[in-house]
Length: 377
Image 1 (cartoon, helix red, strand yellow):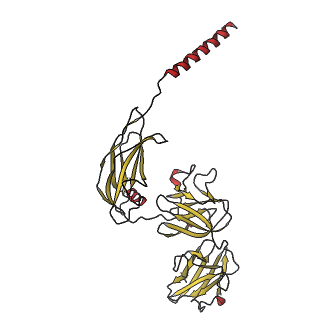
Image 2 (cartoon, rainbow, N blue to C red):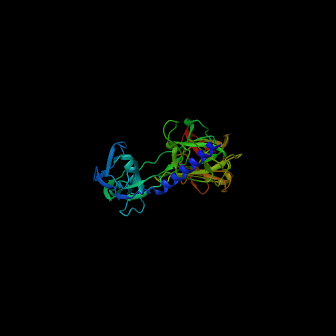
Image 3 (cartoon, rainbow, N blue to C red):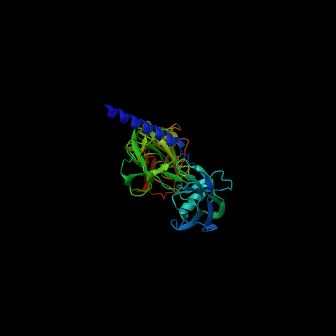
């Protein structure tokens, strides 16, 4: 019993002495002593060549920053279109002992687009290096600013192919549906199945580029979209795909691929369904003469898919109606007159224009997929 008492007293004294010694210790502080200094750029001017995107373009080297206590320092290389760095763009982040970073033609071209430099015109790019400590980026210190002249090439935006249970094509990559692309925007009117998953491919195959939400839990190599509409989310337990949480129906799915923006939105179409008993052709086709009251019925061949066969002249123009009048059900070439192969509803379409040769052609309209085809027989 006495031994136990002595043991408890010994432990108590030891604890008190330990706490006292901790209070007597000096608090270690870390201060920034010297900022990083940009030492050298491997070039004073760059003319970027789209034919060699992987070729080396620029190497940046700098002198280390200094802190009062030895510690691991991180560096962020920033660029901007103005020397005040009103909107800095992060070119790269370097951790550890590295004091240099190399960039390819493609990386520098993307960076030039990111700060708004115009293609095919020499513009000034300002550059600096920021040192900091830890994930909280504390004690940040900025280097001097240097600059170089950069002539970018016209940026090529990726093509996007939708595939998955939420799409009308299913999970077969070879059947993935490509989006209509105009500059930085890609879009389509297509049916989405509520509660199902999908993803975007950059090609008609799994191997290669895949695009998903830039969020925690998604594979780093698939992270792309920085913002998305509320009816899209990352599926639980899935690190590759996107989940469509909206009501099943036809949506206008729009991707803005502008570097640094990279958004996706699924907005309900003004015509949210695709399955109609009959749809009609109206225009200078098969003697119709743009008479909506005499619009010509198409043949239903599948789920939202319709066909019509006719001879087509060199100046053929037509539209698709859901009634024999100029009513709410109205489809045509997406976003204006033309022959893109993509269907748009009333308010976002024009005439389908086709240069025929007087021969027989089959017109196929797929309202579920948002596409049309004109094939010579």
